[in-house]
Image 1 (cartoon, protein in one colour):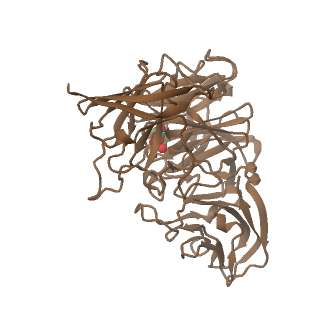
Image 2: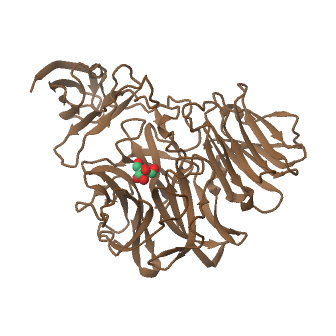
Image 3: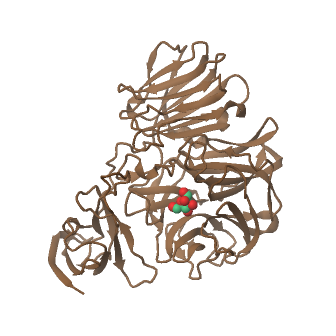
Length: 603
Ligand code: FRU
């Protein structure tokens, strides 16, 4: 093996925690050809900062060949694995941190980095990693990761006054990869605090989506009150279900040493996203796993050994599709505790009516073994009628409340949205309820009442007309809420246009010819980063009652969420205007607009 030494690199003097003694961290590299390089760091700082260049995802002539570098801090632990990092080749888009053995020696191994790569000279030792936002399109009041890529919310659990939002996270870049459970906590589901990642990718595989429960009675033997997380390990063993437990309120997790706890009996390749819940009538834990184009039920007394019960869902909903991220819960119909129904959430990709990924649900009964859906297989009901609503799952341990958190993006373009330092956000959580309409049972998804604390100041617009262009209160900052009651005129398009001085706009209206609610983002701002982005989404007004409709619209720097008639219709779409929309103009000359309120919104 050709060995090449690169000498010493000195990166300044770093003060110890005591502030009195000076310590110097040094780096020394050894290259074993182009295939392996080892960086030895003495008196390590907290982090090695790695310069990243995002791969060009748009294809075409300019597409760079990118084989990501692989980086690993050597600890001798067989669970450690190489992480994929798109190290820069000709320009640096941002840095990502690799945690070192602070104060001690660290050996960092690199694969796929040529000895003459410019990246070597740009690596930095540091005790801090700056997560200051550098993206214009960073939501003002929605949850997004401090830096790096995020997809599905997973492992959502409430315990001791805290809501834990774990999420599919890449701590080493702003594109999908290195799946790890990121972690944020909140006391109110509105203000989130970023914590360290909770469960890291390991040598068994990526840590895919799943769920968490609080084991109050210590059924698993990891301690009463432990938070037990179930995730799919996707890698060496295929897709298998694993367990990890936390005895420090969800901050850190120990992976169970006998993982996996569940493998597919038929060798299925797509077998993932375990949802675990306590099923009171059987006094057992249940697990649902998405198994290609169906969901599979299992039960267990100790959370470690699982018995197969049944499969459900083949041929149900939009076809063909891939089932992902199940959820399952019981709710009273129209608030009647004596009439409860079970709801099966099925996230499908592809299959969304607008292309890409979306959330379907099915209402029915469960006898402890099998789920029976009330509707015919071809009936697909949508939890949200927009295009940026996926992997929706609910919190466990919230008593009678069923609170869902979607990821606000779509797999068709999630990796291409115009941000760099971070990618993707979650919608404001939604409270789910069951209502009946025309003899059928549906799920409504309304803003959680806690969202009221977002409103800072409200302005009422009296006697609005369609001729005037009004300033949006709070519009300059790009974060506001618009509420109104609309009584649409016959055959009209009744609603409003949000716009900015650049002529960019998003239209929201009830189309009374087609009897639907429409959100049109064709000219909303930046739309051409993906051919799948520009479009108008719509929802059938048959889901609503009466002639007057209540619209509650939440606008953030890069998203619009419509909650209509208490969440009977919900529509979530991303937008990327080059300036916030600060004007509103109403449409529908014969339509009536009452109780029009615009509120400045913020944390
Ligand atoms: C859904 C999904 C899951 C999987 C995860 C991987 O968006 O594909 O099925 O667990 O993302 O990040």
